[in-house]
Image (cartoon, rainbow, N blue to C red):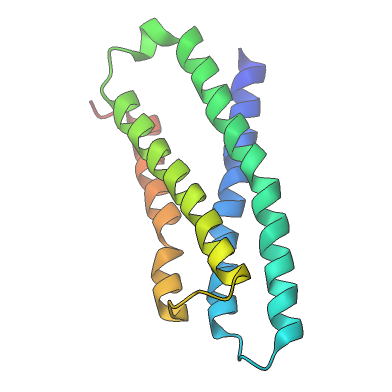
Length: 141
């Protein structure tokens, strides 16, 4: 089971790298002047490749987490922290999905949000990670 736990941690770290960086690319895309087509295309290419790369990482992070939950079910089922963590993982999955929608808006030229909005948007996975770490390490309830 330590191998599965190691894979889970690896997948989570890798997924979060994408969750942290993709919205940062959105900040840069929102700042690109209309006449900078090459810069916009380069950022869209980067964002598209990153989204395609991070999606399986998120899936494997969730699957290995479910595997651990099934194996250690009796030990962790007593704590409410696991239910709170699972809820936060669902929030991250929705955030990931929403990043895909935002990317499609940028690709279609339909984004109306400012770089300032995306700077705040960029902080959501950071805040969720803080709460997940708190729950997993301290198991407060």
